[in-house]
Image (cartoon, rainbow, N blue to C red):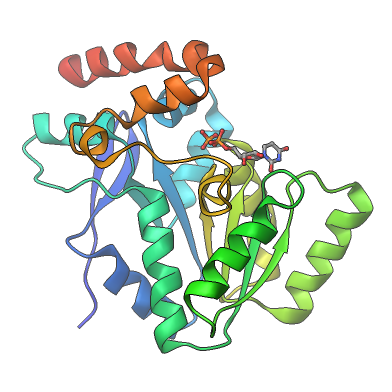
Length: 240
Ligand code: UDP
């Protein structure tokens, strides 16, 4: 029996609560039901608030998971007992599941600096030899992007991981999802950088204390301006 989703709202955006997202996705994958997964954090929620086209895309997504600590904080204030579901972890569980149960299903990694998605694909293929991943970097010329689209149309991959950063990856998925109407599409941000060994995730004790964002700031100090919205989000969590 597939898990069901409960939709709630975070700053007027949908978020889907579920005790086991992977089970829900497995059933979507097995039934060939097209699915766009958005991994919502407070930065994206604040960006969506001032960017109506991004709000539209998030509202159309079949699955919006609570990726960030701020979103969980918002939900807890409203007595929703949902666990955080970082997108990189859901993406990894999906790859592990496919590697074990759906050998050779075509998968695409798209995004990251040249060579990085390839390294990420090798990392996963070494862990699970039955994975069949084709990698494209995220700085394609217009003609290379046409080749990618052709590849999507002819190969019909079942899962497409798009790591172009927010909001580019969300727009890209919304524009191209018709090319593979049975696929799961997920925006994975900088996950290829992590799987490809270019960056590292925060140590577990920081993640457990909801401080992953602080580690990102330490690794990528240029993020400080983007992160100014985080206290604004926290304030909004209290008042709305
Ligand atoms: N990126 C890309 N093409 C672009 C811009 C960015 O492939 O035109 C990649 C970049 O190399 C990085 C990812 O997008 O791997 C963005 O990662 P980030 O952690 O910044 O994601 P976000 O915080 O936006 O989710």
